[in-house]
Image 1 (tube, helix red, strand yellow):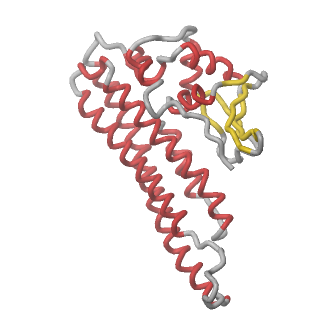
Image 2: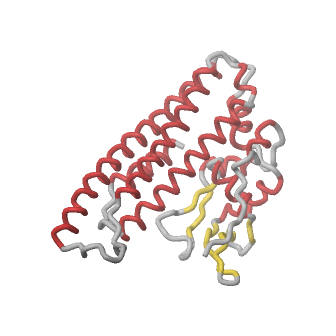
Length: 267
């Protein structure tokens, strides 16, 4: 997850936009990515809390740090949402209101840009905290496990992230060569779909569960209408290398409330 937070930090730090529609189109995908990272952090906190790791001395500090990551990543989403709120939109005023002249429009945009940049700066700060927290968490868990030989790191990793249902494991295997996340028009309504590189249709619920566990990711730099490229992460490839789905405490977390996304039709 540290790499994901760091990658989003780079995107936010390097973003350039024109206030208005352009800003909304550029900030929107970043906000959605931040929300996905928060969901992933929450799923992993729940998995750790239900795992045998809780019996290891020092595990409480790790759980509290994981909870702080959920909080900090939520602030990332809130800051980006503030950018969306501060963005100066160009809709038409109510009838009877005086038309906005160029000087007033320029002043309104200048004020908005100041607010937007402040929130973007706060976003970068929170993303830095999230990435640093992930590194501390990984080091702390390794140190805890080193003092408790009966708890092997691989066991904890499988419980926290690699325990998949058969359907999710099949979806991960299908996406190992890549895939596409896209909007498909059905009777005039947009439905989010997932297709593997070989044409295999993948359940959107299975894909969302895999994404929240950090086993796959989509390239959010392109729109869903163009199609977002799906790749398997290093952790996802490690799970596939195990060659079999695992049952156990983590299975419930992979299908916990909030991890499966119901397809919703959008206008």
